[in-house]
Image (cartoon, rainbow, N blue to C red):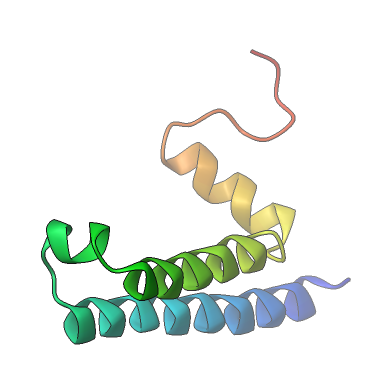
Length: 83
């Protein structure tokens, strides 16, 4: 995959992830931002869990170039590097 197509794909995936983050935010607004509301409402929990799962699945679709670059910038161990 060329760098341009990889960048284009990463941008699309990041837009999808951002959309799911907005959906979690919408759920918080709809159901209430209180921890007790969340803990006592299985529909609230399921809604957020679904979006968080989708975020995780889409993160896996990001290019290794992008994830390695930002992992290093945040001071974390890069995937595949030795401990």
